Image (cartoon, rainbow, N blue to C red; front, side, top):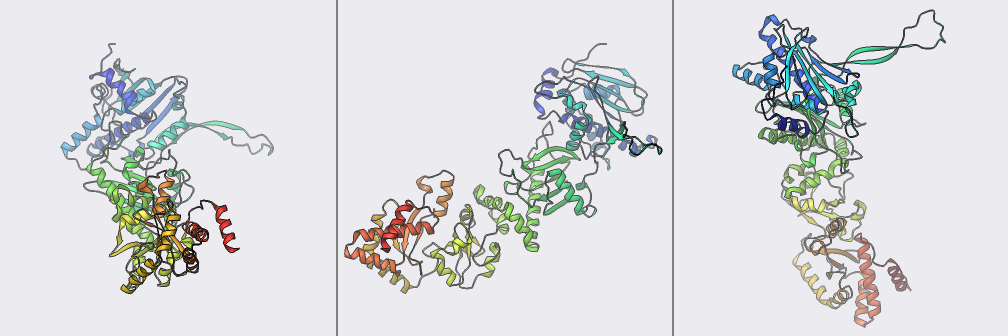
Length: 638
């Protein structure tokens, strides 16, 4: 029997098939099952036009069987089968796809009910050589009495000889490689491990995938057997269906219960809690796809771990192509779990990598809009649930605003929440604006550790007195978010530290200038004493009852500086220019001014240091020398 050679540069190309194209060896089972599914589809399609087929669709199936002694795994189907010529053309020519040819023939015939065939590249079959030393294919075409065996051990060629098969269909038998320290091939002889692979990649193939599973069960007891007699067991072999066949996302939303959706989510995405929302959509037209997306209600424990994998599960005609596809969602929506199934995905040759096309971008854009719409709905109709989501994942939306130079700011602004000085719950920017008094010129904000600390800031007193609400920026990225957003509606954001936060009358400006000139000697003394620690010392128009506060001059605020330092970035462009602001109407300033005027340098220096330390504490900075501060306070009291 003469061995035939492959019709391509076989050795190089087949070596590429086996060693380079596929990243996971388990993929071979997905590919072979998909080929069997295509064969069943072709027979079912033929039955639509050929009354002689007499097909009972419920009889169509894919069977897996193992032989541990001979180390073989066989995938069988009762589909359309192949003639000798088709075996030659489809398996003797690497990258020649019978399924692709079938699609093209159907397209030329303009058939209306063309089935959703899975394969297209003609290389999936050769993935079997990743795990098998030899592959044997016995096939009998429908309508033929003859069967043939195709067999190959790899790039050295193949043989085709007559064989026997009682009914039409195909058996693909893999003679598995011996296991090594690096690769476990024995697992493909374990039906339970095969079941796991089927569940992962082929659970929603439309035909039953069956395997013979050996179980142990209790023997039926004779009625006269004593109750205390030992229980006897027997070994039973049962043909069990491994796949569920019909995915939830292929059913109408009205036909799927919340319990079914939640159960699917918990099982598919390993969460012990139900999701807070499910988005199910079906689109047909220029782009066709179905999707079922879930918004989790909690932050997974490994969410920020380096090896945590994100992205949607991708299916093509119910076959899993990718378990995690991050390209389908923007970074700020990476918390979303779910499935997208489309025949329009453009995949690489191994069907493991998504290629960006106009259709894919359209799907991504549609999904992004769906997710936002659902979050907006939750915010308006079920704020308590939205708050649960926001607590877990709101920070991602904030970083989504500032990343990519703010290109997504307008898309995301509606979803943002911030703590407020007057509200018990975080507020949206639109709701804040709706509550603003008519005379309030800006949206005011302040940064700090928490709402209570911000409310106690000396510079907040004037705004509270006017009844103005303050957005409390308690997260490190919040100030950057507001800088990118710039405004909400027609109202700009303004820090309560800004000199022009509250407009001054001409009389107030004149009074402040007069005080600054009157006490120039005091502020100059303090600035000299604090050289290297503050950029400037100024009389403040922001303070009412408090004596001192710390602000910043320039674009880098005090909290921005803290954020940069936490990242290990301490350059001059990332450091705030600290300004010590003192209240000229406070009692302590009166004492300080008197000490400077009387030449009591020691007392003036001590008061300056105390005021500086107080300003640090109020601003949330650690004291440079807590012990010295304590001694100065005690000495001043004495």
